[in-house]
Length: 93
Picture 1 (spheres, rainbow, N blue to C red):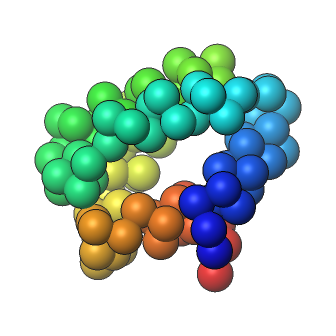
Picture 2 (cartoon, rainbow, N blue to C red; picture 1 turned 120 degrees about the vertical axis):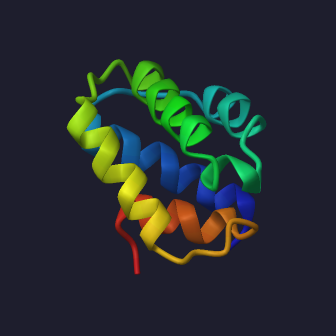
């Protein structure tokens, strides 16, 4: 899967799950600051979750943030493989 396909999949997933339209530019801007260390550092991961929620205008409870952090940390994903992380977050196999 190419990066371009992932971007389109992310945009579609955001729209289908939130009903909000997010531009590819907004996704790229946010993603450009994400590094493999981001998913390993709980504070940075929490900040990223809040940034995504703000981008789509969707409130995220502290409980939901905790669940996402736990899911990411327990997933054993290689943090260098951001495509696998995106697929996991979008619910793809």
